[in-house]
Image (cartoon, rainbow, N blue to C red):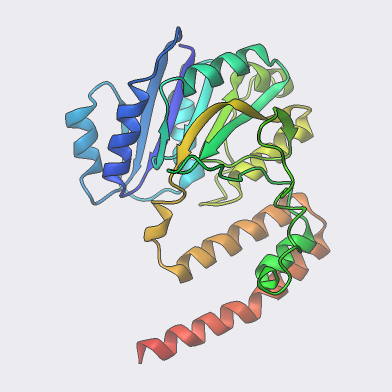
Length: 286
């Protein structure tokens, strides 16, 4: 098997249906398998996959295990030389998979790669990021970009040229291709698994950081394109809960990769925001 596509889905039945239709319309001389790991959807997603796409390898979880753990379920069952983590709210073009597979097969140094993401109007989705630092994450926590628009410019890689192939720090986890061959060269005998301490957010950044620590590389490939609907699943989660997920993952990342004092500063910065959010929730419930 050349490529294993792994889709973690939660309550986006129609987007998932479009995603799978597009995948099976892919063209090119390569073989691929598709896994759908459903995180206990209540919208009939599991039944739709069973009825309309019997060729899909379906794993139906009885609870929402989060993104990283569900991805690992698929990775552990996959047989492809390459693994593509693909969000359900994505839509590949007919040549997307073959272009990415061919590019990574020839790019021996690339352990991870992403492609050119576009929105429904064909405009570039700016997805390349530099590794997080205390300065930019503290600015995000304190909402400073609303006052100082350029404060996160370096982190967001605002001047990145999406028309050129380049080695990068990290790419969006919505289209995240991993070379098992390259990963085995830098971490022999190990599967390329995500850190399951992250429920959602930062797990792909963590994996990219791990790749560089082991001596691998992360690349952006400009030749392949994929349509990105940007967060259809996560838009269903209440804002307060998304904030908790984001805080938890940010702190876990800094605890793992950055100096202890940076973790402590971020923890303290989050504290008044969480207290204020709790007070607002209590007020609204009265």
